[in-house]
Image 1 (cartoon, rainbow, N blue to C red):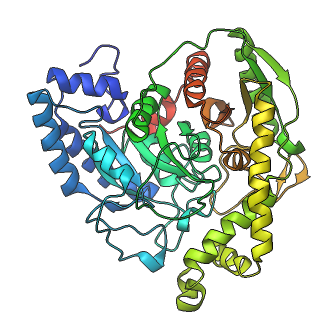
Image 2 (image 1 turned 180 degrees about the vertical axis):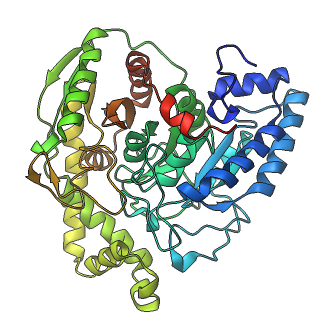
Length: 462
């Protein structure tokens, strides 16, 4: 048993560095770990609905190849590491539904670019994880089956749209999850599931021949148990080194407890305020301030709907009964867009990004709550938070999408529990400063020492 690892813990809960070192020494076999993945999915996926499609045979073949690579000295950075794939990414020969009943029988002919890089790095693909239809919701529900459940409380949502990936990692049905974040779809599930979630700078990680949605905003990225695991993953998909560097002290950090004056659950407000004190303990200057993000929806809404209408508007005529209510509403709304309105939003996008760039010229980073509430019950988005009426669509999750509009890198770092449920602190830096977000997040991770033992025990096997 590797040093420092709970002898009762499945290798699915080990850090990537620990797992790959154990493979290299021959202490553990990728083939055996693949069989553990399969057994755990058999046992736990019915309660979670984390996976839409299993890839057991492919994973077994990848495990055999990984075992040979360790023996031959040719192992890649993710050789034998179980990685779940959000079902918006094409894997050759595997079903890709995009979370839509309309595409329930769609088989991909080729790997998209991201999948090619993960495959070349030696990853074992555990399966395709559940997602909101076309990634268009901050929850993970569609017409393909049950909603994805949160491993901390299966009566609650893990968020979305990468909720299946979050559930797969949190419950130990994968070591890492490939997600995509167009409005918070990695950071929201990470916050709700007690994980680290990272959205890179827009455009950093190409996905050649990938799906088309939220084009101006979406970024692929990892759902992970710790920052170091996410670094390994990011180095593969971004094809660059992101090894940890010291951020030193005296960063100037903008803290906004309630961006746009939004309502925040009192428990979340207290826990994130306490978390921000850790930044001061680390020697940084924290300045409480408002953020210049008030018009983000004027940009986000039209540009998202324009893509939906162009790519999927035909489904309103071809198969309206196959669509979720939220996708049908989006496609109906897209019909009312005008070319002039879309052009105005496109100009607004550049103005918004320039404005955030200017703001971040005065600050090294921004921190906010990742979400306004902890995970809420399945199918019950909160309409009242801290005694205030809120938008059913954005009320619980208003703090991530502005930074998709900004194109900046961002992360959610688990920082505590509220009523027994995890919450996250959102960390943002300027475009191209992905390294800083990862480094500062890792400093915070160590300072927070977030403990998910209770949740791990819930998903332990005898």
